Image 1 (cartoon, helix red, strand yellow):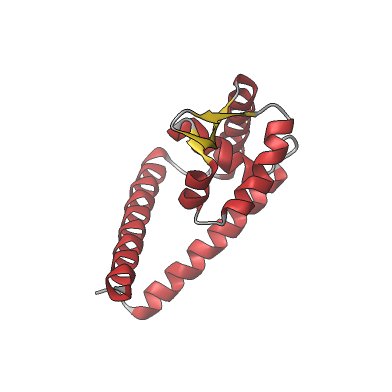
Image 2 (tube, helix red, strand yellow):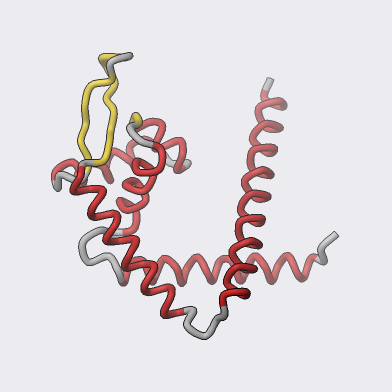
Length: 155
């Protein structure tokens, strides 16, 4: 069992890291703000999707995603087409320009973070990556269990 003080310190460090990462992403966002970049990354990773599925993946209301998608459509980074399985719905997907924009963003981010970690050796970076993946998986798993428990108690 991990000590409560250690857990508290871990939470604070993770929060500080998230704030720093957001600040870094905003500093890089000349052509693409962080929130729309996340939508492009989801479409790149999972392919064509309905807006509601994107919202569910992000854990936000569909209206939030709708507001973020509108400028992406206008900029030609995302395209919309009717869902062949449901004429009332539409599917969103990356355009070639959206994919290129996301690629440029990823290269900028990687260069920025590589510079920030210039004093690290490969072994430390690999260890941190492994531990962060484990932390992420454990937190996601716990969230899923909590959601399932909430659903069980609702019935």
